[in-house]
Amino acid sequence: MTRAATKQGLIVATNRQATSALEELIAYCDWPVLLHASPQRLRHQMLLGAPRVALSWLDDESDVPAAIQLLTWLRTYENAVRRIVMAYRLPTDVEVAVRGAGTHLYLATDDNVSALVDAWMPCWQRIEGRQKPALRPSAVDSPDGLPTTSNANLFTNAVPEPSRGPPRAVNR
Image 1 (cartoon, rainbow, N blue to C red):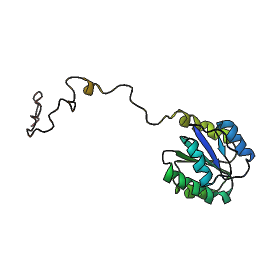
Image 2 (cartoon, one colour; image 1 turned 30 degrees about the horizontal axis):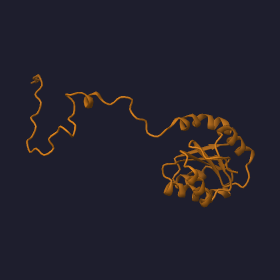
Image 3 (cartoon, rainbow, N blue to C red; image 1 turned 45 degrees about the vertical axis):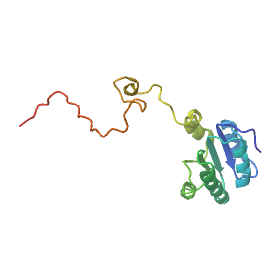
Image 4 (cartoon, rainbow, N blue to C red; image 1 turned 90 degrees about the vertical axis):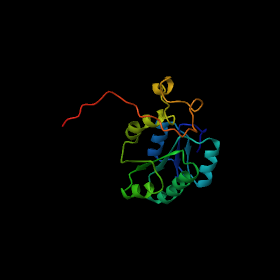
């Protein structure tokens, strides 16, 4: 099951069929889903359009090696994609294994998938990459600020004079 590519995110699951908890995640996120994921299928999905976030779903310990393979592939070939793992009812030692594969965020839940997604989803939906500053620093824009390369003498041997401020009081 795969829906159209989106720039927001992609849910990646090694499961052949969606469980009820995974269906809850799918309905809540409204992101495309790649079931029965393999490196080849994931690569094909990335060629359609790499999302900002790849959310790997884990609900069975037997899927951990395949998920690690997918996370390692993403880290190597699509490094800009944020890698999040959501583990449903899995032991805590799974976190150590998937973090070693390059996971940016590990989320674990036992019951309420939508509450966990509600806690972190708004942060990932608003991120557009690096935020640009609204205004450039005034020192660069002002005539007294830093010289631009067009009017700076880059090949001078002269040492600039230190600025002399008002005298400072010395305590003795």
